[in-house]
Length: 328
Length: 293
Image (tube, rainbow over the protein chains, first blue to last red):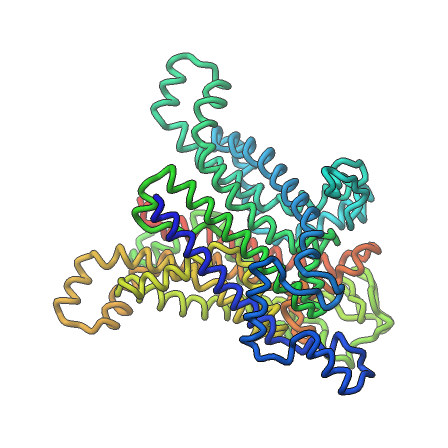
C-alpha cells in the first residue's frame, strides 16, 4: 500500500511539474505584456526599465526557475492588471465559484438521483421514458446554449430572476456568500441550474443503470420475498448498495463542475474564478492565467489522487494492476 | 423481401428499425446539404459588405428591409440576413467538427493500434498520456491551448484534435487487444506478413465498429466545444463566423429583447447536435455485438 501510495504521489508531482512547464512556456510565448502595461507614449528608456522591473529581460529558463521557486512558497506572481498577487486574486474569487459549484452539485444530486431511481425502477413506463428523454436532451445541449435560453426566458421574457452578478452577499465565517440572502439566492438560481443540468443528466443515467442492475440481485429478491415494504427495499437495500459508485462519480465530477463554471460564469457575469480567467486571457494578464491554471490543475490532480487512494483501499486489485484514469 | 442479404443491407435494415434515428439521419442530411450548398441557398452573401445596409440592422423575423426584401429570421446588428448567416455558419461549424474528427481519428487510431500490438513501453507511455489527459475535462484543455495559441481556425482545429485523439486511442486499443488474440492474426503472423500489414489490413477493419460510434459522438462534441470556445471569444476569428460566434454576437442584444440574433443560430446548432446524437445512439445499438440477435 505504501509503495503504491508513494508511486502514485510521485506520479502526481511529476504531472504537476509537467503541467507547470507546459502552462508557463505556453502562456509566456504569447504577446509582449509590456505593450499592454506601459503607456504607449512612453519612450524606450521607460520600456526597458519596466521590462527589467518585471524580470522579463531574463532568459526564459531563468524566468521559469524564478516562477517555480515562487510557486512552492505560494507566490505565483503579481497580476499585471490589478497589481496584486495573482494567487490572492484567485483565492478572493474562489468563494463565488465554490458556492456556485456546490449549489449546482446539490441540485444535481437531489434531483438527479430520485429521478434516476424512478427511471430505473420503472424503465418501460411513460415516466421512466420521459426522464430518460430529458437526460438525453440535457446531455447533448451545450452548457452555454442552455444558459442563453434560461436568460432569455426567465430574465428577459418573464423578468422573474436576475441574469447577472451575485446579488447581496453576507459574511459566513468571514467568507461572502449569496445563498443566505433572498436577493443573493435569486441571483444564484439560474447559473446553478445551468451548471447543474449536465451533471443532473449524468446522475440520472448512472443511477438508472445501477438500479436496474441492483433490482435483479438475489438480496433484493430475498428482501421482497421476506415481505418487506417496497419503500424499505428501495431505501435500504437498493439505495445503500448503489451509493458507492454514485458517490465516487460525484467526487470525480466536482472538478469538472469547477471547470465548466468558466462557461456559466461568463454567461451570467458571476464574479468567480472562471470569469476572471476569461477576462485575464482577453487582457493578456499572464500571471493570473498561469496561476489559475496551476490552481485548477492542482485541484484536479488532488481529486484524482484521493479517488485513486480510496479505490485502492476498497479494492486491492487496483494497486496491483494499473490504476485506471478518471472519467471525462 | 427477397433481396440478397449483403452486410450493408442488413446494417441498413437494422438501423432503420428506429424511426427516431431515421429522423435524425434525415435532418443531418438536410443540414449537410445546406452547409455544402450555402452560397447557392442563402438569400444573400452575408459577408459581402456591398449587400449589407446598416439601416436594416436588427430587423425582427419576417420584417422587410428598406429594399423590400423579407428577412425570415430577421437581421443582426450589421443588417446581415440571419438565415444566410446561419447557412454560412453551419458550413464553418460542421467543417471544423469534421476536419478535427478526421485528424483526431487518424492520430488516435495509429497510436492506439501501436499501443495494443507492440505493448511494452510504447503501450505504457501512450496509455499513460491518455489516462492523464482524460482525467481533465476537454473544455479545460482546449481553453489552455487557445489561451496559448490565440484565435484562428487552424488553432481551434489543433485544440480539438488534441482534446479528442485520446478517446480514439483508448477505444481502438481496447478492441485491438481483443482482436490480437484471435486466430486470423495468428494465421497472418505464421504467413510472415509484415507487422504494419497485420495491424492495418487485418486487425484494423475488425476494430472499426466501436470507432465509428465514438467518431460520430465526437463530431457532435467537437461542434459543441467549438461553439462554446467561440462563444467565450477564444475560438474562431470574426472573419470565420461559426454558429457559436453568431450566438456570441447576438448575446449582447438578448437583454433588450432582440432574441433572434442569438436564438436562431442556437436552434441550428442544437438541431445539428441532436441529429448527430440520434444517429450515434442507433449506430451504437446496431454495431454493438453484445446486442446482436
